[in-house]
Image (tube, rainbow, N blue to C red; front, top):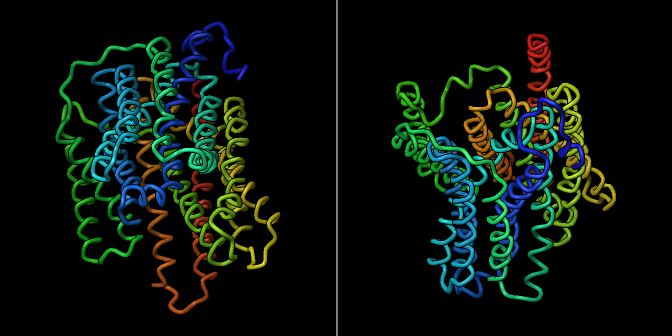
Length: 470
């Protein structure tokens, strides 16, 4: 943290004192957005009982939050240019905080889902432009460490969410899972008004048609994957896939023709950016396949309880918390694609080690292998995000942040679909359950190998760019 507050002659970004307040705002926003998935996950059985609904219906408390967030990512990233990221981020945080009150006071599922839809939009507004603000807050030489803080914050939410949620439910009702957002949100809003860099919006027409097409394409894809994992009919799955592909195709055609596109396609002509985005896609496929497969491995194959399964998984996000800041610091001094490739290689090794576990594996063996995966992913994520955000001009950072959030969503969705395909038994009718779970982990390792290769291919591009700059 001390290095992030340093100042050198010629530095861009904010002064150190304002910088620490601004980073506190961004970290609290990211933490609230992530916690509101992991906190609520563990409370769904309790909420279903208290609201008098089925377990399957209660899942929509999570689904709508994620769905509207995924659908609105590119729209909010572009809207940041139109009205200014300062206004959009503060507006998103205010909406998120106020709807937490509505969620806490809800007495029925329809009202709660309605507030969760609006809350998901508030979270999307923060998450879609948050990474681009790092380029305004920090000088370029510290961008990797700043990206490491983001990855660490998300990992804290992933690791601490179930524990914090369980602790709150042990002493209070589920509405308190939303009430805790109020003091954090109000404090963060006060700091945001003072600390975030103000910028004027730009007076140009907003691409409403492009926004609708992107929302339909992303939303239909996420619904398709969620339904596929729940055994939706083939006809419905193919219909949603067709809607998603058609909307994406029309979206791309429109972006090529409109004067002020929602997503400037010219950014993909920068090889380092497009390669980093593609790397991120395969990395999140790998991560998603592991995250979904491991509970089946721990519970269905090795016989652990759900609580024990959650504890066995904890070393992964804890490892990311340790690896991300260090990976970001190294990326500011050495070649970011090289550091990212090394981190992804460690993740692949960790996933292979998990895939090789037998049914009688000791707890210690599971814990250290999960930690290896987390450390590897942390080492990868901050340097790759640094490349993704830093390879474009500063004025394009909003678009880069939107792409970064979109490929994360697509990667996690594709990973979930692949695991659902394997575990459904389509490929292995009558096989032992351990075999499909192991295959899903090996599939995730393969995606990691592809991501590692893409990082390695980017190393010469980075060196060439550094030579030109020198």
